[in-house]
Image (cartoon, rainbow, N blue to C red):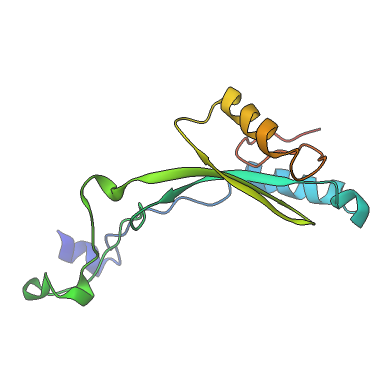
Length: 142
């Protein structure tokens, strides 16, 4: 079966997830066009923030290598792994035109209460800011 699929131009690959959906692209364009006339002084009042997961050992991406059967354990054709993925941490950080803020480790699941606590404990150290949104939520602001 695989030989017939290969002759037809079909090969096994890891599925890729699109980075931005159409609604995200629309929202980004709307945001950009609505702020074309903003002054540099206005942008000095904006703080950008986000959270991310950092893999402590490698990453979650599947990787494929093409090899012959007898080369299964050749170091250049292997990817080191650890049982149970090696763990990860969640962090929140921010930046502005003035530089970067603190990076904060997030313990447990991020919910509204935890997010408010992070903002309360870390934002005032870096100045007064205009609140913004990340693109996690596909709704556009009117």
